[in-house]
Image 1 (tube, rainbow, N blue to C red):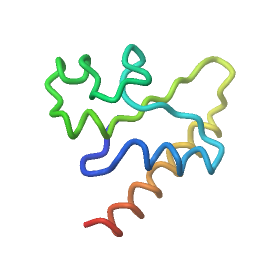
Image 2: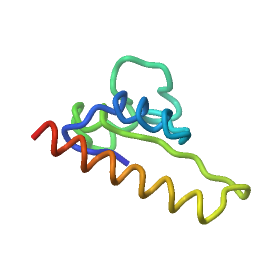
Image 3: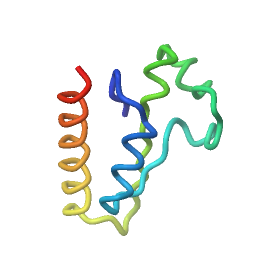
Length: 85
């Protein structure tokens, strides 16, 4: 998922403070400074690719964890957009 106009790095820091693990961009580009070539190949512009978050779920995640993560992400995006736009 990506959030136009927001930095993935900022979101990652704020999510980490709230105990939510996430990564930026595509898994095959982890740690790269450039936007993910996979996201670019999918037609995403570089700025949008830089705002991408990656969350991984497995059988051990609960519905409550997913709901919490979604609510926290939505709240952070709303707060950041109010302060930046």
